[in-house]
Length: 222
Image (cartoon, rainbow, N blue to C red):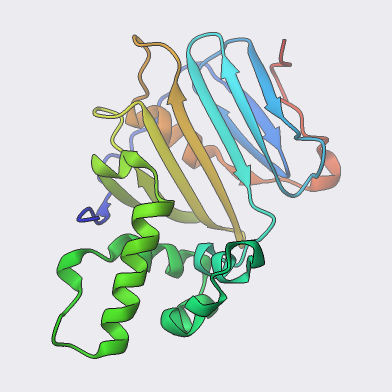
């Protein structure tokens, strides 16, 4: 809970031969060529869904295109199955702000930002955000979190590839869209590098949904 985002400083990009993939109206490149298998139900929707790509070379990617694009905090209070509607007054105007602002507020909250003798409403919101941060964010947050700014998108990278085999990319403001990509490795001798992650980030873009049927563009799965 003490970890807050630091600006990403390494924007170098891998130029290794790669593969272009397309799902749910999004296209991106991975800097390797290998056969892969898919899991999930990518054909249920061209606009939202979850698909896992497991490459023979050891990399595993999970692409998530949420159906609810209003933001994590808004989604929590709107989901009746979670019974968190009562948290809406505590979170205040955060649930009406952009998905990026909601995620930034969550990540930038730490025990040191909560003032015991400050306004009670601010302290209550801070404690609520800390609770959500502890439950909802992945364990790789323990290593580090980065914020990144690109011309067509911004967001957060949770985890340092030098220290963790699991990296969580929260990509927001992508033409008004929000995408999550989990990058993991299934082999002990396989690790991501920051230039490889940057290749995925910088190549990610939206494409017309009528041109996609949730398929890999250049490397059909086995």
